[in-house]
Length: 231
Image (cartoon, rainbow, N blue to C red; front, side, top):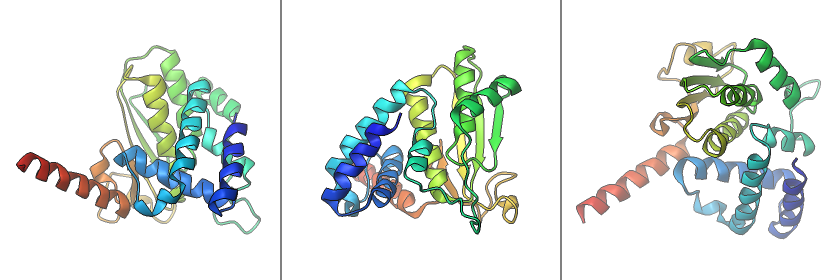
């Protein structure tokens, strides 16, 4: 499923001067910013051509493999999960087949809300959305997610947004929010909604996102729109 993406990373990492893992991390950040803002920081444009090829290949993979954990599998193949014996994150991703089976067993597609407080790359949510779409449901869903790893949060958001755009295509309303907190020590910052200390990585309302790059990008877009309307 991800062989083509790995090949692109190998090809372009040599040209750009980054290893595969470093380039993958840069591509995730570029995808994250582009998905929300429609652009990304100038400092990331050293890999613009490579990113365009990679992003096109990613979208083609999502189209061919609906609701699969594409980026999670790519991370696994690149050996990027924090799984060591002394790991603080203990990252072990749920396989797609197991996630699909769990969603079918739970049969919770009629529920209006869904939560996963250790969401990882979002594989369980993707499976639920798949089952929901297959059931031809038109009922809306609100999703609340959290993970202590900001990279996982960004990947989860990317996968939800593009599967929604490519496969759901408005069949049912979908809204989501993705928090970035330690589930045990910072539970109060996401369990009952946004607080002053909440860190929001992704949201269907982007103005609630607390990531500084996104906040600055949204402000600049607003400023440009304001000046354009005044011209």
